[in-house]
Image (cartoon, rainbow, N blue to C red; front, top):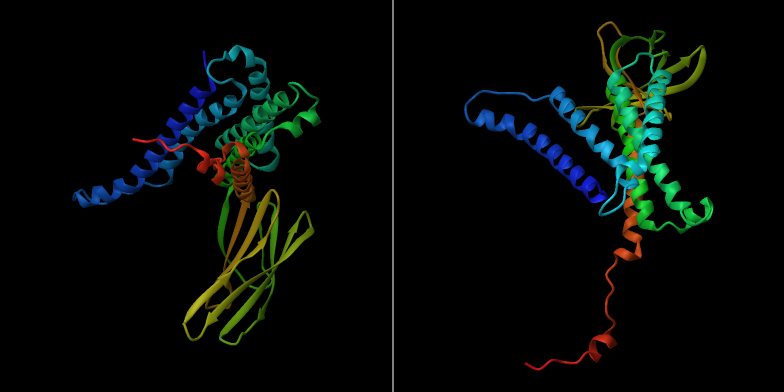
Length: 314
């Protein structure tokens, strides 16, 4: 027998375990050094490995939690929903990575499957709740704000997981040497250094580098990366140029001018990076929905009711 309380308890334990991992990974190198045992570094592979194994059961329970009842339930009652959700999430998750990436990465597919698992199971729960006593449209209108808060919170987390999985596995960053007229191809996009313009301000000397971006011989956009040198502060400032998209963002940032007249240029390709922020926005909206639900507000007694209460003598 299972219950929604059990799923919540298990997920809270997993979240506390993730907190302990971050705490140990942050403090252990400091303690190790203070004890005179030398310097030790805990890097990205440590956190990636542990968080991957913690996130898999967490997301699985997050998906089945809304489908089971409070106090006591049987997974056999939602067996059909779980099988359908599992098959769809695996097929669509692998297809997503296969379509939007030129190389199949198992961890990216795992992240896509996890995100889609939560989205599909949550969609099934909303459909079941809305059509329990009414038709779909009427039932959706009768769902409370607290319920929509849960839905948006879960789906927002799933969207962020999708974005994190794609960025973590397919993020590309390259430092190249380019002069006006040079071209470079990265991830199917051709970056053409079209030219360099002066842009001097009242307290700085600046340059603007124009980059034409092509894909399949069609111009996608023209980016304008800027470089400024402030004479008084003796400091350099770089303003990256960004081509925003739903499935990817392209960044171009200017580095230093090289002795031969060329420039050091940094180019980024970040797939699905905006999904991370979009998921956070959905979770924030869910929090606002929960705060606005009248059931979670404390009712204050009116002054007349308070004054009417009898005073007890001691």
